[in-house]
Length: 74
Image (cartoon, rainbow, N blue to C red; front, side, top):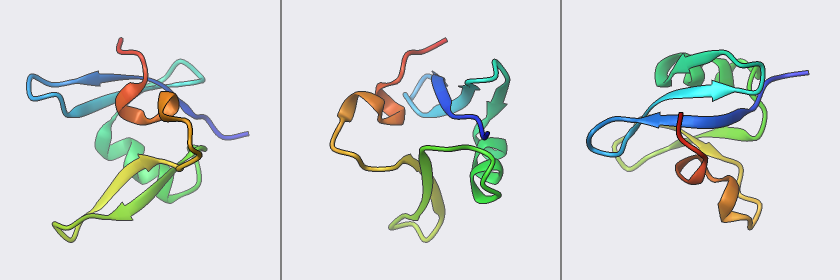
């Protein structure tokens, strides 16, 4: 069973820079991005942004409380 993101750490500008996984592991954004690409993190997807880069986001399910930006911080 793959991990899912349970909490986030943000920088001074409010950007998510690290994520805590359900296993307790902490990974930076780039590692989480790669893990999601390889199917190792559930409940997220990669989307192509206006800047042409892939970005990590929660799978839309109509529940804003589980959006990455709304998760608890650690």
